[in-house]
Image 1 (cartoon, rainbow, N blue to C red):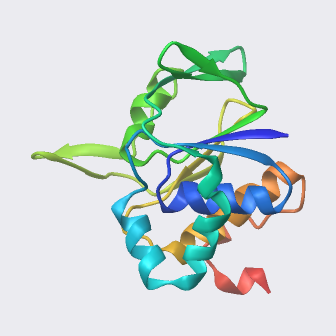
Image 2: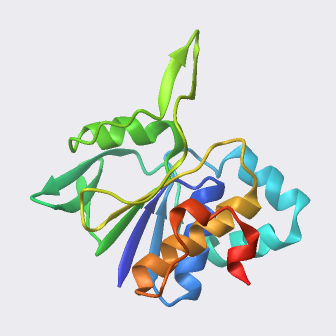
Length: 179
């Protein structure tokens, strides 16, 4: 099964790595010329995160220029990159501050970010899991979260796509539920 992950920050990298380990064919799209500075810092500080990054290094498309999502009925039909429409069986949106703009294009109002002066700040709890489109999963962690929580959320999404019993989203941050 082909999965397109949008965003090569900590959440996107962790999700892509977990999906690959479970046997999914993964493509990871990043609009910038490198992974996020927070992901780079995590890879320098934590050897385990460096291992996750190494597993997905070959599937990252940098400067991908994701301009939007296309949808038909209750399915996402593709990701617009320039003039192309990239298709997959499933899509994971882990695009940080770009997520609300991409979601609005397909009719999902996302209250996650609000303007405060010249920057965007979190306005609601992180969003995680399924949404109104059957083949779109959201992984919108807070940028202040660390890579450990990103891995917990990646495991949750991987379990959802694999059809395995997943820990409830409400308990995804509780380390005791992974015993």
